Each structure stands twice: as C-alpha cells, then as structure tokens.
Image 1 (cartoon, one colour):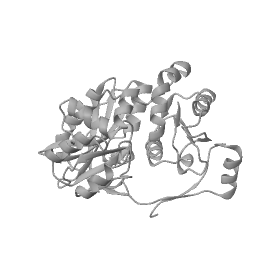
Image 2 (image 1 turned 90 degrees about the vertical axis):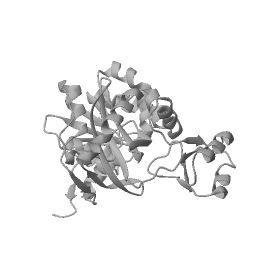
Image 3 (image 1 turned 120 degrees about the vertical axis):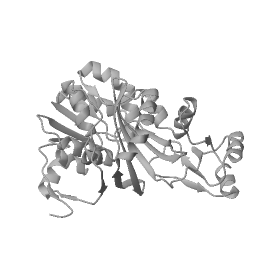
Image 4 (image 1 turned 180 degrees about the vertical axis):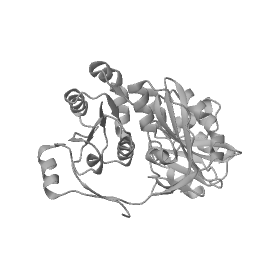
Length: 344
C-alpha cells in the first residue's frame, strides 16, 4: 500500500505521519511539501518537494506523484490544501483509483469560516456562539443587546488564535467596526469548565468514534491534553453535529461549556494537531482510516485510558550530505536522520 501525506512541514502533516509510523503493516509512505527542509520528510520512505497549493501547477504535480508512485491513500496535512482537494477529489479519485481523505466542498467551506460555522449550528438547533460580521451594523447592535462584554473578534478563516482581538469595551468595538475587514465578532463563552477538542471520525455518513480531550493552549496549539471518562458526556452531541454537517473522514471540534452543553466555536474538517495524542489514550484515528479504506474493517468507539499528555520538543539531525542530496534532487528515497528525543 502506498500512502501520500502532504504538508510535511506542518504540525498537522507531521501528526499524521507520526500516527502512520505507529501502524504495523506493509506500507510505503511518501511525503511532500514545498520546502525540502521540513521535518516530516524524515518520517517517511520517499520525500518530494512540490509547488505551493496556490500555484497553478499544484494539482499537475500532485497528479504526477500519485501516478508515478501508485498512491492508494492521500492524507492532507495543511488547511490551505483542503479546498483544493475537495474541488478535485472526484476527478483525481476516478482518474487514479485512489482514496483522498477529505470532505466535500460545502463541508470545507463551512468549517473554514467561523461565521458560517456559527450559522450552521444555529440553523440546525445546536448550541452556538452568537456571531456577527464586523460590517453588519444591525447585527453588532443585536449582539450588544443579547450579551455583555467582552466579545472576541476573529478572522473568519483564522486558525491557532491568530488575529484574535478581545473586545472589552465600546471603544475597541467601534474601532474594529469602523473599517472593512474579515472579522467575525462572537460572544464570550466562559472557560471556567475548560476548553475541549474532539476528534470525530465519520465513515460512510456515520460517526463511528469520538475522542474528547480537555486541553491547555500555548501560541494557539495544544501543549497539554487530558482525558477523563466524564468527557464522554459531550460525545453524542459531537457525533450528531458531524453527521448533520455531512463530514466524511476526520473532523475536529473545539468548544467550551455553557449550561452543561458544548458550544462549538471552531470546526476543522480534517485531522488535527492533537491526532497523534489521541493514540496515546487508545485510538489511532489515522490507523482507523487506513483499516477502513484498505481492509474494509469495521470501526467502533474505542475503549480509552485516562491520563494526560505533556508535549515536549524532540529533534532530528540531518547530515550535511543527506540535506544536500535532497536539496539537489527535489526527491529523495529512504531519507535518513538521527532522532534525538527529549530524554534518552
């Protein structure tokens, strides 16, 4: 079996690769990224450099990689590639007889836009954060009538807490609504009960497994994660939302608690940065996808162990001749590196 993972330089892509490396089985892992200096390249068997997803030749190069390497499964390791693959999914799958792990265009559009996410939740009678676009004067007025300060203003397509403004008073609100921008303003949902991230796997239209973790953030990424059995109280709501949205494959939901219910403020229709962490608790999401699409294995809700994950740095040392070989050829077979864990 030949697997291609994009985004070898991204936390998401590297998380998928880490999960693949835990699987016992006959597979060849191909990695690709615009940069040859991407750590994930040394987690696979063949490494390739490709154009940026915004490049006109991107799909042409991806098609070449798929064809030349007889790729069976393709995992997407960056957000920017999701709409590109959703747009070309049917064509590529038909042409090359492979499976691309991505939801349809509508799901990606909703998940990539925080305002559309809130509207979807509201229209389907799920708990939602009251949200308005910054240029919607009437909506901003209604937001002030429905909830008190503070609010949060976020880019509709932002990630990892980038560009977030805490709106604590009228002055800040007037400022961010005074010029054209792509901000959505949302009510503040208390983090008194913590912030959660749920990984949900949907196969053939059915949410088959959910792993919900409480998390602590640093620079927009999870650096501590916790699992307790009581977190399963939110799983059924997450499953219903994933199925209503029309997800196919992995999906990540981020939420806080209001009146005992999960209020989702962000959806990522993909694997997430916490994907490899879930395997520590007892469910390798990537392995489940591989088993489903290659072995027709039935996937069910896993039994998980309670505990917590503390993330630490680890390093790869790349010998000069190895780096030069890859940089010169743009593709490399059997990339080799020295792995240096945090503690030996």
